[in-house]
Length: 142
Image (cartoon, rainbow, N blue to C red):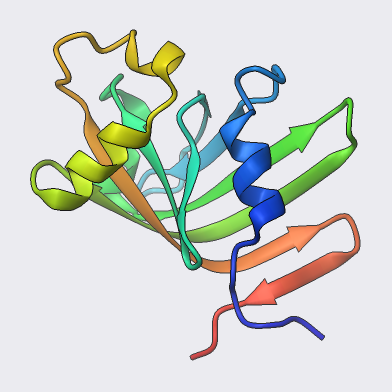
């Protein structure tokens, strides 16, 4: 039976070291008409117990999709540790303010170096469901 969404310290640590571990997250999004897209996100982080966040610097197809259809999935898998999760949720694009600044301050320096003028956006993802290899392990309560 799934428990309410409460992202763990293990998840936080895994995502914080994803770049160093060569295990960046993959974001799956889809346009309003259903055209899918996949993109790597080296800045993915656990923002709080109910949210992931990442720094959107490319402003390409994923961002366009999220503007049309905010639902997404995030895949994390570390082949060395064999730990992995699938996170499902709804994204909010944040172009200014305290949350954007907080995400920016927490972005991995290697990833942040790709946006030297800090022109990116924060993407905050409310997590509705989390799966591991056994199935659904967390689900947001309605």
